[in-house]
Length: 502
Image (cartoon, rainbow, N blue to C red; front, side, top):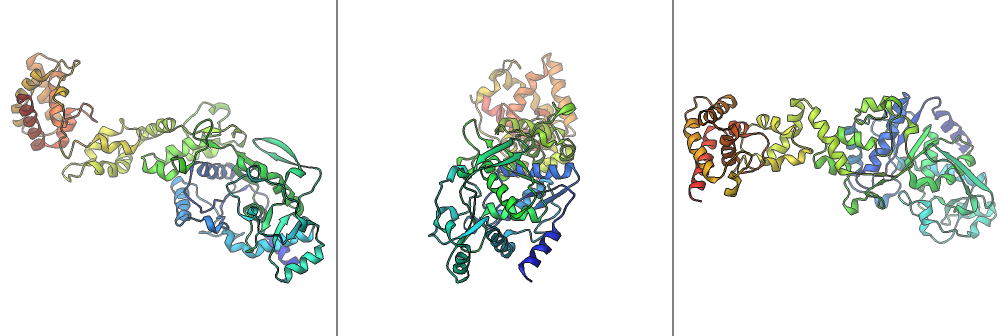
């Protein structure tokens, strides 16, 4: 097939008439919060208008690939419910959806630009700018280089390339004038062309740079809205010039402000900032993470302007592209905890037990103790699932505790009062016919009534003896019920002994 026929067939495949977005990560590491937000916004823009959400893997930077990173991306999208309509795993009409599998077409399109006068062969020694720059903005790395190859006779340059001389293909940026592009968030931006470098489009190994491949792929896949970080604003004029050089329509640009650790620093894994996986491992719910991330740089408008909590389905309806802010968003872990706690409280008891049980079992190894009894004590008392184990460390084994724990002003107890209460409670608890919450509660409140004191004066010492902690999920009744008769009685006797020996 000649190149003209090839280009015609590729153009015939380009979809039209429908919103199409893409999430196109590189398998070079973990799924950080900025990646997740980009995926979410890209997904919502498509689904808001019943469009198509595409997953594309941009794997041309082989040196930086991380083993397992691709699967992490798939797992994250699946967990978050950001299901793609086309992609490497499910196919689609404009595949392949992995850049390394599209290698041959990039060479053809790069040479098309050369023939049209918008690119040129460069035979100079290898420069640093041949490296992929998927995470470095043009503004950060730009050094204007006067390239002598730009002035080579096109026919001579083509002959040298076809003869096997090593080369890269560079974009031929106009030396005068300006280039203007429009962004949804930042508006219209104009830059002088002499501030733009002749970036490498095709490397010596035949693979494209990120900046070239994403333009070719976005066009051939019919992408209507390109969502990416604001660090790529500086590269956008060169993207526009590429689209114009090919004679292609330019998609809508949606550049998102960075997610910051604080007012001065971007979030970074090397500085200990959490990835999506880290947050999940720390006990945050996917729904809470997604809800919070949606609001990192986007604000609902109109009647829902004050609304904070959104399910994914609600976000599909509420998301308005105009609500995306150009101001940096600061990631606040305390705010995320607030969202997480709210989502935990809204779960059904069955849902909470399912997610809490693995964390309960980290602390409670005894098979005789049921997580189903413990979970209700926790649901209203934890912000993160990872808080659970430290709240339950007393169930398997009574911890060492200070005798001062028995002194409580509110309950009007001290060591002497507590010893008296434990001695009075012990025989009554031992005599119970059945061991359940109702029986235990009746026993202890009945004792308080007989003694003419408040319930707390009886219950505080029993709880300290049973748990050995000042703060516990649930009260003494629930704790003793979960521990069971034998263990509860054993611990109360130990408490009496501790007080007697003080």
